[in-house]
Each structure stands twice: as structure tokens, then as C-alpha cells.
Amino acid sequence: GAVVSQHPSRVICKSGTSVKIECRSLDFQATTMFWYRQFPKKSLMLMATSNEGSKATYEQGVEKDKFLINHASLTLSTLTVTSAHPEDSSFYICRSVKGTEAFFGQGTRLTVV
Amino acid sequence: GENVEQHPSTLSVQEGDSAVIKCTYSDSASNYFPWYKQELGKGPQLIIDIRSNVGEKKDQRIAVTLNKTAKHFSLHITETQPEDSAVYFCAASDQAGTALIFGKGTTLSVSS
Image (tube, rainbow over all chains, first blue to last red; front, side, top):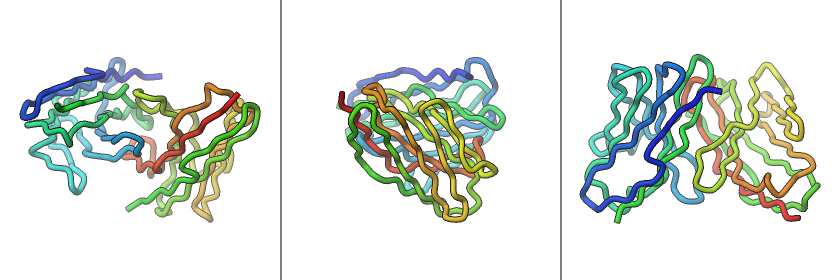
């Protein structure tokens, strides 16, 4: 199947700093990318939907100024957690759409200390 | 919007037994129902999916059934093995390329 590369797989950062997570579709062009967040032992919660070349659509309760999403090309979408705080510590996962199918990245474990 | 309920939250079985996980959904417009397996520290892996024009689908030891009238679908794993131990999520959407709404997950433990 199609490959979606997400990195970093793990990152530890200090409170107040920003962290960028990248998601690349390696062998296809992704017109749409979904970003999910998962707390320990919880389900995946949709944060936002991004379409190449346009602004992301955020789910209710997700701060768009805190979680910046950029989908500048058909193969790359980034999620930047700005001014991170310990409560932002979570597992972040992207999901790229290829036609009528979609594929998850490997996920990024963010720990804010 | 769509709401997906998943039961049970935990399931413990002996190796060789069958495991069944059930989900219900609320939006009759949903047509795509995938199941994911997630191991610790990894992203979800699609194990099987079903679309609304099919009532049942099977892939070796894994099968999924769908009842659109009742709005529920189930995952069946036969001859379970310890490596089947993981968290399983059901999800629903109107098609594969749109946002999925996930159930809360089922932690399956298979003991040998």
C-alpha cells in the first residue's frame, strides 16, 4: 500500500517552545490530510482537515493559532504546536487521502516538559 | 454528526478462542467502516474494512459484518493468537477519503 512518512516519531521539548511535525506521502499526491490527536489509552480525535493550497478546517475546540497546519504541497503537510505546554503532550497522527483510500502515518509522541 | 460507540472496552480471551468486538453508529449516511489495530507506540494499522453495499467480509481469521438497518458492525477474530493482543478501533465515515470518526477502542488480550 501507499506509504505515509511522519516524523519525528518522538520529540521532547521544553514548555514555551514550538514543535513541527511533518507528514509526507512518499509515493502519491495527497489532496487531503487529516490530523488526529490521541491521549494515552484513548481514542483518536480529529483535530483538523487540510487541503493542499487552502486553509485548514479545525474541529470545534481545537485552537487554530496553537496548532498551525500547513499543506503547502501535495506531498507534505505539517503540524506545528506553538508555545507548547505539558497538556499538549500527546500522540499526534496524520492520515493522507489517496483517491478513495487513506493511510495513516506512524505517529509522533510529543512530550512537553 | 456521526457518533460511534464501541464495546467492550477490554476483552481477554484464551489463545485459540474467538473474539468479537461490536460497534454502533448514528449517521445513516455513513458508508465506510474500517477496523484498525494499534500496537503500543505505533499508528493504527488497517486490518479490514467494509462498505455498505456488503454485509460481510472475511480475510483469513478476521471477518467483519455490517447491519445497516440496525446501524451496527462487528469484528470477529477466530483462532486468536498472542500477537493479536492490541487495541482495536472501529470507525465510520461516508467514504474512505473523508474524516473518520473512531470508537473508543477495545483492548484485546490473548493469553497463551
